[in-house]
Image (cartoon, rainbow, N blue to C red; front, side, top):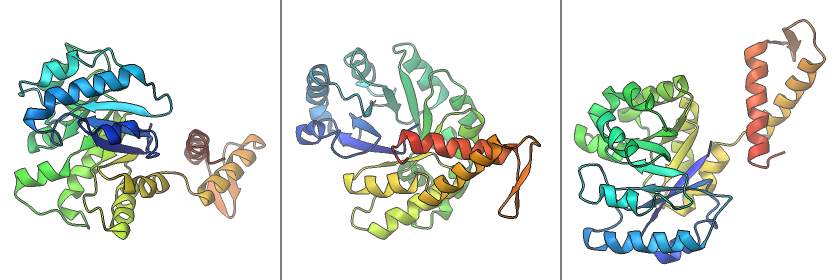
Length: 271
């Protein structure tokens, strides 16, 4: 599980060279929207040469390929499938396009949910093999619905909630949509907290400046870590199953949640 997924254009050498400097848990090298048609071949070659020479063990690397209807789809995969990457991010994902990708790779797949049909078929998508998580693409989704994006996010509340529930049911990551205003420092915190409170496990971003806010929001707080340690310690010395702590009852689900908090804290070096 990663907290932050940073999109990096596949045709920008300076950003590729620094992909492990931005402190995002995962990087998505983009072959799709940020790379113009005339530059797609060059981007593939650049990324292949770069990742063949350098290995980034501390950062998960994914490649957002072009969609399955694109003439670049298969070549994107076939040219990069032997690289040391975690997997592929699939735009305009639907069950049949995931099947096409499964035919040519055994790597992990993160489908982007960015169409009304994809929202309606979330379970069919989430249940496919090799699915690492689902990523909400709110900009394309709201464009298809002909509605405006807002900071409050009421227009995508249903979709966000459905993605969180589906991912939780299938035990995969739920990755929230990027916040697109680079200059709004307060807005990225608000948007991240909204997603976190809905149950998302992580968030994607298109600006390196948003990584810190996302990592902070999707990490256990010092208070959560302290309380979880107290719960686990008392649970270890308890033989009755449920017990009281600070006047509140603590039972198995709360103990299990505390263990998850400590697991996350250890993973992100917060202990």
